[in-house]
Length: 125
Image 1 (cartoon, rainbow, N blue to C red):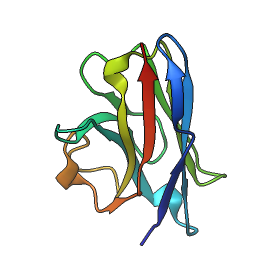
Image 2: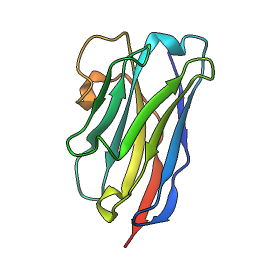
Image 3: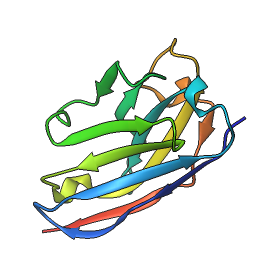
Image 4: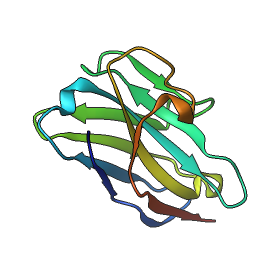
């Protein structure tokens, strides 16, 4: 089992940047592939980015590649989401998620067994 804690959210102006972090407990972080999702008010939770256990295979949600970058540091038990050129429509709660192994979907919430509590990102126009 793994516990996830997100940080790094906040208020930023359009065009700005934020880096989210997700710290995982336990000594088996490298056994989990990871993902980021976000949820805007009144909308469903949507896939942002995901990566395999070794970080070599990376997946992005539609239209996010180029602005967002996911990475991980297995030595620090942490996964990151660098967000650049932020837009007001990027506003929402951002969640970190984990699943054992590399197989299965990265794009849907049911592919993940563990979730953090979320961190709020607000982009002002």
